[in-house]
Length: 64
Length: 380
Image (cartoon, rainbow over all chains, first blue to last red):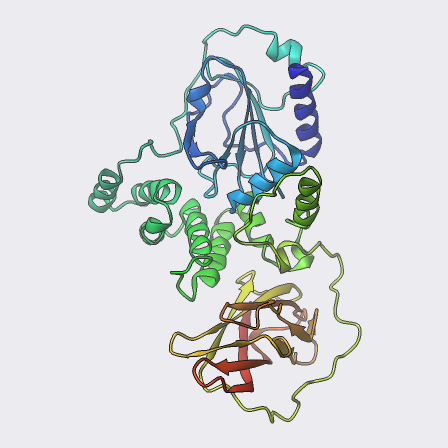
């Protein structure tokens, strides 16, 4: 069920994606640069590296 | 594990969206576009070693090609982190920027302040980004982030009167430097004219709040509610008003305000071109020196716009929202759009005036007054 949910997310976001690839974004095979940003839920810092050891589906988006 | 990063200005709006859609995964806030996305959405499948395995994962092969795979730690390259270290060493970053006086150093200091300094240090972030653009006028990210911080301060009690206008100008400068940056473009379009909108940005908010209430939950509170340009939908043809309203004070007989209220005009985009449309944001606020307040037991503040021949406006007579309280002192905003003729050049003046009711605090004397407004811009 968890995997099905992830697949659905990928499908939905893929369907919304009308833009060309961002040229400056990391490429396949590269390690994604670590980043630390505040969570919208509580403003606390969270890093991509906090999830090291897990597979991550990273989605950059906006609510508009 | 899902991880979201939102690229918009107001994090609570994304929180409301996430609450509406019942997203249970962490979402991070990147208001200054420090990750450098030039468009969204971006979806990346990142393996357990932090290595990007797909930049466009396909739904039909996602499980087989990614979730069910064990990957080696064989990264070809690790780009540097675009975000400042956390917790940020503000003093070190400031010393580094001051001694080196380079755009990247000032921008790095600004990023740390913008992301982690809170409202208290927002003005310092603005100063840092200004220094970056002084060092390098072609630093597009610095111009964009300067605009973000100015816009943020324009919503706070300690704002400077020109903050919103300067934010729009900064974004315009950034976009001129990199016209392919759609995140920067969207920030302008969010507040801009309907002919330039790709979609309505925040028209979903009432639907979201209603759906959440029906579930028995309390919607996330929005300190700054989207309205006007932020909820207007796109148009392909300029929607000039169909019927001409009546000029409420054609002979200028209403007494002029003696300095209780000042107005501010912000145009989006900041650069006005012939043949295009521009959104005018007009703000009215009671001056610090006055003891007057708005009288809400009468008509709302109205704005009359008198465009020259050849110029079309979306509305010629506008009214600001009227609060429920009998008296108030808040800023009042109205917005409308102007279609500039294709042969326009040079300085353009659009006569306008506002009519409103004020009452004195002490003696309670009330009066109805007029404020002539100067809407002026250059068509380039």
